[in-house]
Image 1: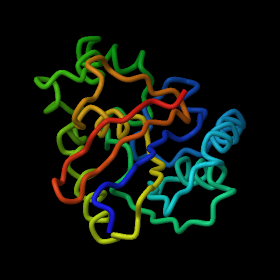
Image 2 (image 1 turned 180 degrees about the horizontal axis):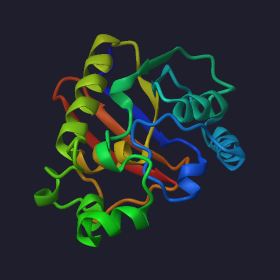
Image 3 (image 1 turned 120 degrees about the horizontal axis):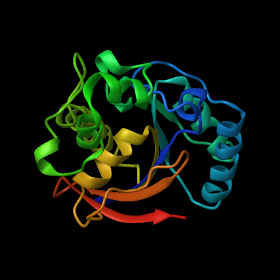
Length: 203
């Protein structure tokens, strides 16, 4: 068993709600054509990388992205609701403008913040950032510990999930990471030390 697993985490392609700056959360919105094209571009980045599995959010936008991006890989897919975006409660389906009008711009600033003092915030009837990170890490660590044959895996997930995982890892960037659709980040997980390390952003 390899002690360290390489983890390539990517965000799904564009949806119409992304285009219109609507907050999606757990709402199951499909990719648009641009999103499918972005996943094709991601496929080229991943083509030469050997993978052992793909751990994937069970929402359609993440599944379709993974299927396109990993079309050249014959790997098992493990789907889980634990890899979904943050549950955003009352603001799901609302635009940034609507959220600012209802809750104020400061709440949106706090939502995007990676500062420790803002990690316990969440929108009404939704998850906090701390709760989101907890479910992500619990699922991923359980899956990686249960499959010692995995040396390098892909994770198809969401923008908020990427931010949580990257900034919870050691040596992560001090500034908030960029999360364009189909962006690709590399982390590693040490099975013995049970810790996460930031490796790189794949341009």
